[in-house]
Length: 345
Image 1 (cartoon, rainbow, N blue to C red):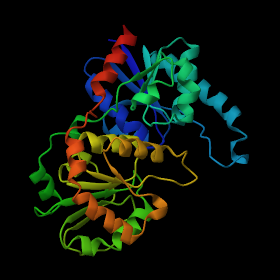
Image 2: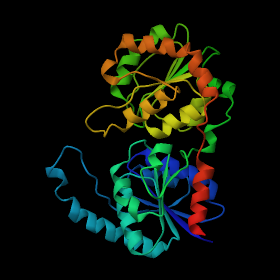
Image 3: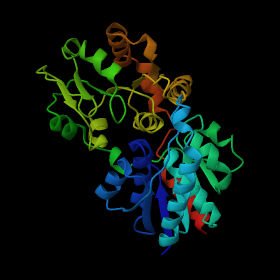
């Protein structure tokens, strides 16, 4: 049985897509995962995936002094990742972008182990820029991103099968909702302070006519007894969240954005614009907006009033609903697996 090692971490956005692919490959290949002791370790443990840990070094944007030691730390990280590869001896390394992938990719190239990486965003992240030439293939979520690489292949985004075809009534009952339209609001894995604060200023009024399911981030829930308003800090089952949604307000990380559009949920994106981001969410949102597949509210224009106004427009945007119904964005798992198998052959 051939062996595939996956890597990627630092946030759930680099790990959950890997798990989506692993779920479809685990009965056919020997699967393992390498990464740091961050979120990827816990997710792999929860999904029964063999995990090998090393320390990876991360570039801190805008902090020159903190980045001076990166070259020295990177050398050690590559050596440690190489020891893991020598122990497991995978036939393929599959990377999901992010700083965690750099040491294993460098070490795999030195050992002649073929590498595939996947880029989620419209713009290319630093890690994938650094490892792309070392890869057999660079898979992408967006068609135009693939065109930036000689070895680029557009496949779409990996998504877990449990996100699709869920029972709406079961979902509504699980969150204690009635049959009114339901809005889901979330701001990424750790929540969004600015979205949380603005939503809570209008949620009482919103819940006069709709339900609101608020995925607010760990430690961000507040006391509330508003009828039709449900807070959860983290969604263990996003399929259940999506199943009850008539509309959504969300950041525009590529994975969740592609999921929302593939499941045909009308969405108001509020892309992250702060200095800690390279602007990838803004570019993602503009791409979907120009395709007629979403609405956008800029973060610097976000107030309780503009949020309420845009939510009302979203709930009544029948043109958007028609565009989503006719949309072609789908789960990319089968296309990704096809490329994995072609390299293994």
